[in-house]
Length: 146
Image (cartoon, rainbow, N blue to C red; front, side, top):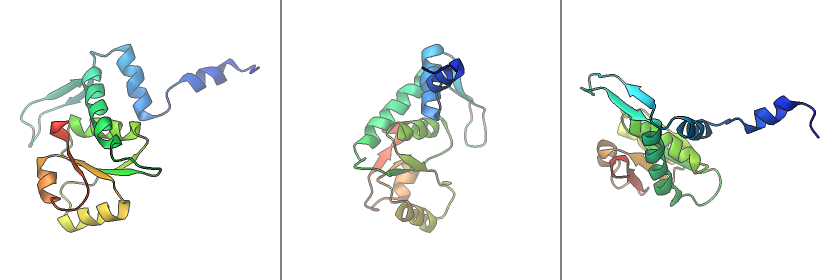
């Protein structure tokens, strides 16, 4: 028997990013999880609730899991910094995989190096990323289609 009550409480607390999202979805699914103000590439404010973030993360997980074949799996996330990218990060983590998130402004040669060096099993990307990486021999998962 454990005499320290805080040990049990600590064990029950979420410790990973995707576990924190699960707890937030349960507690308040309709609260705003992501609030991204307008910017040069984004004319309008973008807001996603915890429930919306959870739903997109689940879709990414389902798509990436099809390519997970063992341990030490890596996916590359190549997309604009918007809510879909954050959802992709969580979805990949839920597969038990890791992710590499190169800057979309990197030259194509550097992106191809990152793909080869990481041993990525899939690339979660947007339309622009898919066009740049066409023919690389790694599955390209269109984040907008998930």
